Image (cartoon, rainbow, N blue to C red; front, top):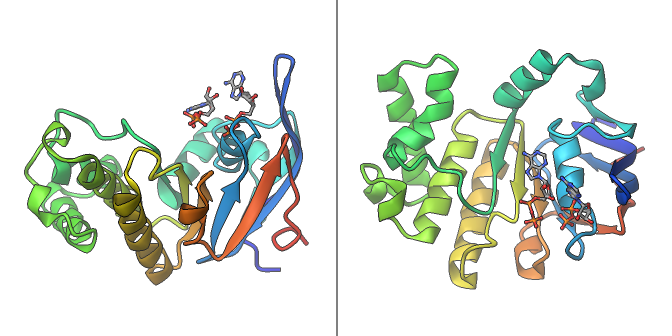
Length: 225
Ligand code: ADP
Ligand code: ADP
């Protein structure tokens, strides 16, 4: 079906807690899918399984047809660095680095020279409308600015899938909506698929499609075929 990332019949328990109970999911290139549901329903666990951070007890996750659990840890880590991007609610910027150095970090770690890494990072800060904070440290910028820097950092490597877990959860609704606008615009321009975990309908409104998780069950008929 041309799906980029699919999951079928995912189960995951933590001790006696059944976090996922047969969840299905699928996403196509460039698609923005909101994963919705009440607190504790299994949204974050689903995202962590899709990203290869958490191994499901059973079921499978396939990225471009390859099963994540069949890869070695090193292969999965390499895939996460090259093809996946991540943005979370807060606490993701390195406090000792300036904002432009934070955005450049994943490029530097993958061997891009400082000058080029910072040039590309500056472009991304510009795109997220926070060029003015480039030389500041995260402690010196507002929550909304910091979150735009985090979005720039998550997209600077050109990921095929962006995993966003409550990316606007710490922002007021005006800032949150602007961050969502910029994030989804940038992702659509670069054909990056976005798995967006949120419990806020106003945030989910920026997606193409919604998948609801209830008690560990996600039924995504559009994605899995
Ligand atoms: P959501 O993201 O929808 O709030 P989660 O995926 O975080 O839901 O959690 C689903 C269920 O699994 C919850 O009952 C949660 O307490 C439990 N859970 C999640 N992660 C862990 C963990 N690392 N250890 C123990 N229980 C966990
Ligand atoms: P919440 O959904 O309440 O905002 P988080 O998104 O921080 O909480 O985490 C959701 C669940 O996933 C938590 O129960 C946590 O234990 C687990 N978790 C968070 N980060 C990781 C990680 N890097 N690896 C494995 N499990 C994680």
